[in-house]
Image 1: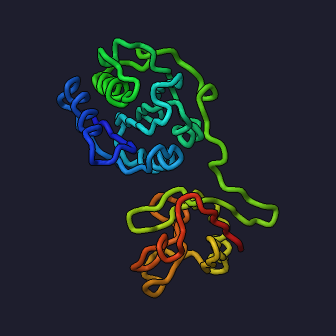
Image 2 (image 1 turned 90 degrees about the vertical axis):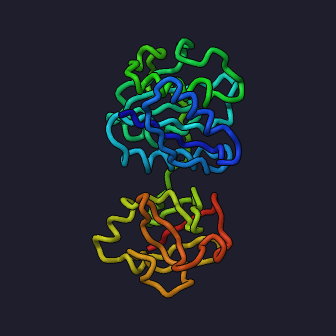
Length: 266
């Protein structure tokens, strides 16, 4: 069984997702297609980078992940395919793979140049359908990455800057909200490992989280630890610091949104 996942900013209103699935199934009718999400904010490469980085490890070996958040479609940007930790990834070379490359576990990385693995006609505006989907399907049938194009180093790909939080000399952490989920939880780019030392020293309840004009005290393990409609900090299922509201919507209550600064002070 071949598992092919889709992560895009297409939404679910139009036919784009269905077309990619149709192409995949035309090449490999036995493929199992999993929708990770199609609700990445339009053209938000950073949000997509965090989404694929936090989800791929929950899929079995051999899974093929197609990432289509591609504001540069039709330009001179490249498309990439690579293998990492026994899984495959195909995406535009626009920085969306930065967090994956940071793991320094890529075993093979190629630029997609062999058009015999594309659809016969390639649109300038829909490489997800015409290149990424068929290439993913061919990989699922055993095509080797080196048949798809020339190998490059991750250093030759596009990397996004400023993805990681800053830590001051006093230990203050400054990050940003990289996503707001369906529940209004504010998901930051502050990794739980940056707060591990705080947990070990028992200082977790002395933390202040500053977002906008609001100050939130402490990091908790569950939403129910605080009263309803009360904001709190916690480490979410992605492994990043989140600001949430028990039985409420943090984005609305705190008038916060993606891109806002999050500061952690001990």
